[in-house]
Amino acid sequence: MSAYILFDNLTVTSPEDLATYKSKVGEVVEKYQGKYLVLGGKTRVLEGSATPSYLVMIQFPGFEMAENWYDSDEYKELKALRLSATTSTGVIMEGLPG
Image (cartoon, rainbow, N blue to C red; front, side, top):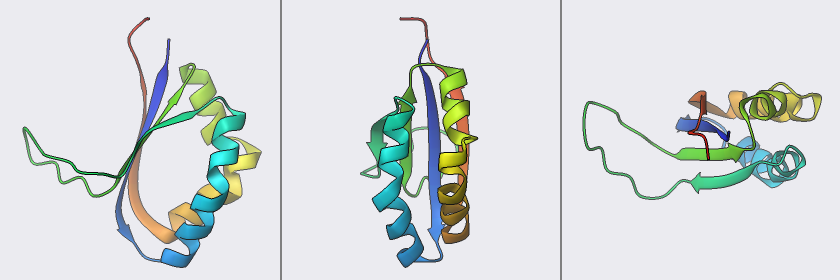
């Protein structure tokens, strides 16, 4: 069953560091069989008081693989770079059985 990681980059505090992150993260995502499904773009809030800024959704083959990517040594430094360059939220969620 697929799993998804959803990040919302609420603010960018260091565009330079975020650019470095973006130039390197794709390779690590691919190593863990991840696939970008959403990378920014137009949003419209339909219900509630959500205020999305810049949504990023990555699909992985399963929940464990998503966790393995997020907690991996390969992503560790990049994650620290992203966290220092942005204020963001993130969640891993399991999808429906296919």
